[in-house]
Length: 72
Image (cartoon, rainbow, N blue to C red; front, side, top):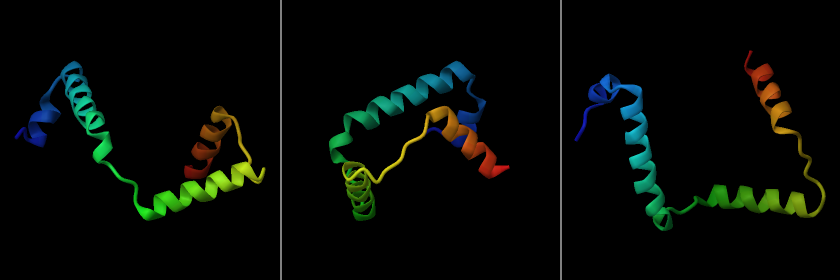
């Protein structure tokens, strides 16, 4: 197994290659991943809010500004 220290010492382009390999491996096993019950419940609630017209949306750029503002 590769150590975390070894990963820290890799040049950026090699880190990106490792990340890509990890993502390819994980995404191939996607069928093995299951949402928890609270995640399923949240999605059901959000879908219901969307369907009923009770959901509101904002532009992604505005959302980023709001997030930045809330953490400062």
